[in-house]
Length: 271
Image (tube, rainbow, N blue to C red; front, side, top):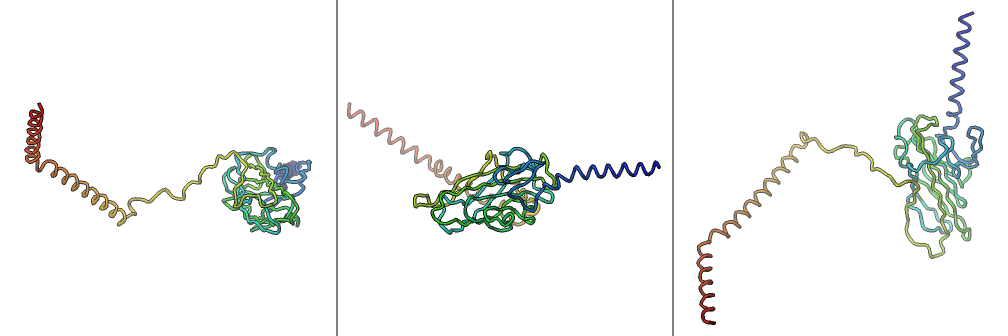
């Protein structure tokens, strides 16, 4: 009887732990996310517009949402290739590193290693294979709508995670919103970079920190020989200057005395 009671207690404890972990696992969408979602009983009408509330309730400006190669205006039917990148947040480790949810008011979205959420061409998110890229970068294609549509609004939510596949305090997200006007001939030419965040971006650590002197071999010897040669040239130039300055000092002194004498004679004649 006692053994049966202990087994029942262990089963209930395991079930409780599983129940606690289940909501977190259910709301970790490394395979992509978009549109309407349910978060702890509350409805998120659009993740791209409202944010990834399953990870944290507030956006975090330490995460930089960067969109590169953005035009100043759009032309009918043109396809614009842009690069979306997330910088900041937890270290990129574990099985997953980040993801995003994007929506446009007009036009259609596509790209590399991305997908339209539930077939909606105005939405875009990562796929499972691109949720574990170390640089948290995705290539996005946007095809402009028909002429006369007017300004197009873009909504992007970027999620930078620690890779444990469970929403937690370490995960961070931020949002980038902007409007792209229709090109009426007055829009500037060229492309630009848009970003949202505090701008505190640190350069990545180098892959290596120089070369060990013991492994430089002939290159190191050539370096020192070059320095010795340069030093020898400096010594020769200095010696030549010293010789020119003091090697004929007697002649210089005699000529100097003649100049002084001529100066005194001229002054005496003037007086």
